[in-house]
Image (cartoon, rainbow, N blue to C red; front, side):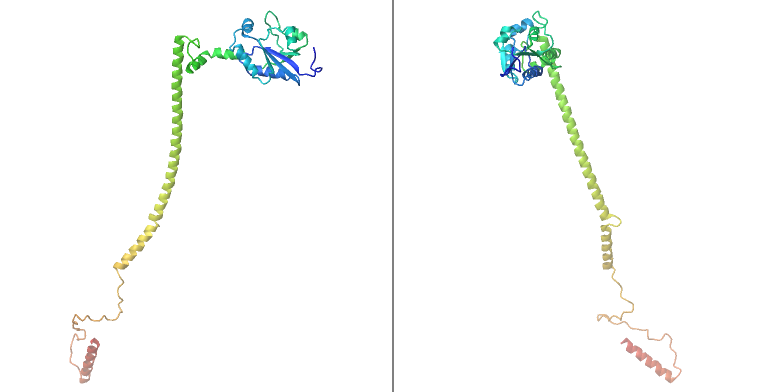
Length: 303
């Protein structure tokens, strides 16, 4: 058997399995097998449904689906259909297999403690690492555990109770539960929309109140500026009041002003201010003439 260091062609590595519900754990194992050598050709053997049901159990995917899943894996160079459960020298020679890649855990099946024992003894076995937390059995366990959830989901998606192997009573129960879940979802959506609406109203109310406060402060400021103690309205009122008082009460003429001219329509009233209150005979002719001259001067003044 040639080794990887002595051959000039790609090293032919073989990996086999059931590959039901192809998942990331399968892909990682094939990636390791492909990258064992710098230059390798990976062949993947997939067992048929009959062989798998006989030695392992019922599969979720049929063999055609499993073949197709492996064909689209980028690490796989060739898919060998209807692969044998136990590798024989004739099979290894037919496909020119140099090494067999599989995890190192003993795989007991078909009456053997380890179906890869003779491959290991021949020095053709290369171990790969399993990916923890993911396997076909784990996926099936999840489905079985949450059977009601998946049955209700598929009923809702249009599958019949017969296709799901669900009894009449369970079908009605699942459909009723689906209706209840729809109502819950509607109520939840209404609550979320209501909360969103209330939040919008609160935001708008806050904005309106803030704007109202600003306008109120502006209005009060303008009012005080106009009607306050020292406002413009008071000053204007005082100015108008003073103007009205001036218009209604003009200034009086001064006492020392010259005598107004008599009106031509009115006759002058007689003036008796020049008449003496008491008359006494003049003591002498000189006094009498002085008195007459003073009266004549007064008469001239009146004229």
